[in-house]
Image (cartoon, rainbow, N blue to C red; front, side, top):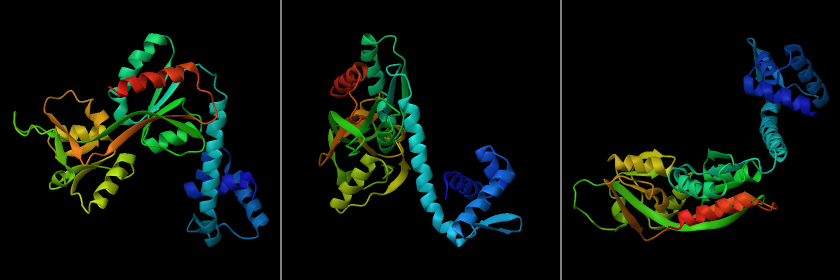
Length: 294
């Protein structure tokens, strides 16, 4: 199959019709129909049958489609990288950061960065850690700030700071329960606000209580640490988050306690592999390390 055959096939699989595929690819319907015919002639088998005015993929098409999806994903990565490589170097600082660290640590870092680079434009995108690693590998950002480590061949990482997991909950009555630590077993006796397992720290927590033979009772599951903290602050139950996020709270009704056994949490910077970081990137990393270490 030629690339134009694959594009037409993928478009029909996505939209379910020739007209939809034509709109998606900005071509005419006859062009899509002819391209599919040419593909089928080359392959020696039919890709779609028409049933009640609908195109239905054949068994061969269904087996072929997962590989086509992989190819289209790789082509999109090539497109994104080619665009990134063509941008003007040094025109702006592109920062990718996890949502929780964008609340307090990032603004404090930018305050320091602006003293040295007052006129440099800064672009900020909030993504989850695994998305940031992929975007940095594609050079869609100059620096990424993530939780944990990512062994990606196209990205290099640098440790910025090490924190810990903490339990946050709403203060019910002033002066009660002034403990600064709490055992994981105690937290799990009541329903908790849980971090999604797809988050690196959510996965770490899941591994931690599995090792201890414990099973949480999730009442609410969220995707970010900051949302978990806000929910805990509003009295929906305790949440286990990282100490960096907890430092962003200005509420006097939030009780923060170190989780026992202690679980370290690392914040790292990711930059594209094999590329010497411009000085603004190095200075931004230095500023973030200073903020995160306090």
